[in-house]
Amino acid sequence: MALLVAFAGAAENPALKIYKGERRNDTVYAAKQYVIAITDPGAKATIDGKEAHVYKTGSFGAQVELKPGENKIPVQVQLGKKKTKAEVRFVYLTEKPKPKPVKHGAEDKDGHFVVGNLPEQTAPLATPLNIYTKEGAYMQYGNGGDRLGGSKMNFLDADIPLTAVGETDNLYQVALGQSHFAYIPKSSTEAGGPGFNVFNTGSVSVANIGPCDRITMSLPGRLPYWTRSEIDPSTILVSVYGATNNTNWLTQNNTPEMIEYVDLRQDESDVLTVYIRLKDEYQWGYSTYYNGNNLVIDVRHRPASLELADLTIGLDAGHGGEYVGAVSPSGIAEKDVNLDIVLKAADMLRKAGAKVVLTRDGDTGPSMTERKAIWKEGKVDLAVSVHNNASGNPLTPMGTSAYYKHISNRALASDLHQSVLTLGVANFGLTGNFNFSLNGPTDYPNALVEVLFMSSLPEEELLSDPEYRTRIAEKVVDGIKNYLARVKASVK
Ligand SMILES: [Zn+2]
View 1 (cartoon, helix red, strand yellow):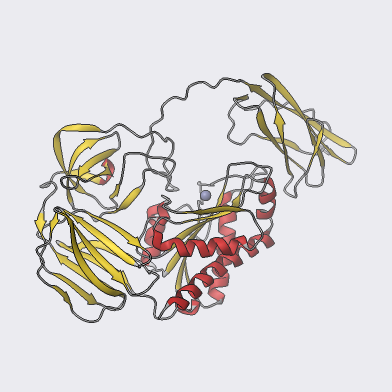
View 2 (tube, protein in one colour; view 1 turned 45 degrees about the vertical axis):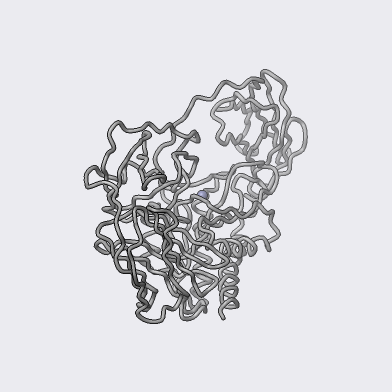
């Protein structure tokens, strides 16, 4: 902790607290540092003798240029004639010690990996190990991991036999045929079973079963699969590893609503891809799972009506309970800001007649798995998670951003992003292939909005204002409306 030497006098002297952020001690390795402090709103402040703007939250700050060695930066606040002084101590070392290698840990409550950014070494297993997938298993492309974990391919149903040929501390490397490999968390597998198989496919059927078009592929046993969507043309692809096309007919039982056609493509001798071309430009999600040994792909229909009054919207307020998220310099918790915006947006959506499914409506912290289950069971037509960001320059506006994982959700994320931008805030960008847990499901369209930065003093001031949070909620709702209007316009 930075040493704080306060010369506080009488009780009515203005408050002064130095914000230390994530800095755990005085030692720094860059000459440019931020000094952020909090006082009473309305006080005047100086840092290193220069005046600093005090925001309505009481936060103020400045960038200072350090000289090598010890630096003591004077901070002073004044309210009327009363003054409070403090010093912020930095020890600036021009040479940084070599970082210790860190290993990434398990996914935390927020769907983030706790630490680490170094790819782990994969060690081959002396004897291949037969394993089964358990509930919640997923594959990732590589063994790397960052704050959000390694890039995920997709979730897998339970009881799929696989063969592990390598391992890291937390992952098995599994063989998906002659030349394909993926990684799967050890915690979502159990030992046993016949191992990875190669099978001839049986019959394949396509049927309109009401809320979705269902593709069923009969197989002698369960095989792993890789799912993804494409836009332009709108397509869903499900590659089945170990499958050999032995299907001599592909039955269409009745007229599918979303599916233009299904094609089976044996791109490689041991990978069969189910190519699903859609009629609509925009997708409403798909679910891939086994019913016995039949691989089922449910492609959701476009809702019968695209009016808000006929739709179910999923909303998620990030963090909650003991998981506070980012905390602003003046002490505002991200979980509270997220919840307020979401409750306001939910109110507006309900007034428009929509059904709203919230992952939390109070100060609770459901797990990522629980949040996804709430949305799936609530049969949401689309879902939006609301967070606020942190990091970067605390003295300037950092801006708003939106995120999606699957390319089919890019339009939704973009419409939300464009809508929030009309507040006149800075643009922090639109990010794809994002590994946030709630962007993982393919069952319904989803996107994440990181409204503003808790750590930016001007944005902290905006977020602390309940009226401004109402305007943010309006923009989130407008983003959803704009997306629905876009889809409506695209329907032939
Ligand atoms: Zn967050």
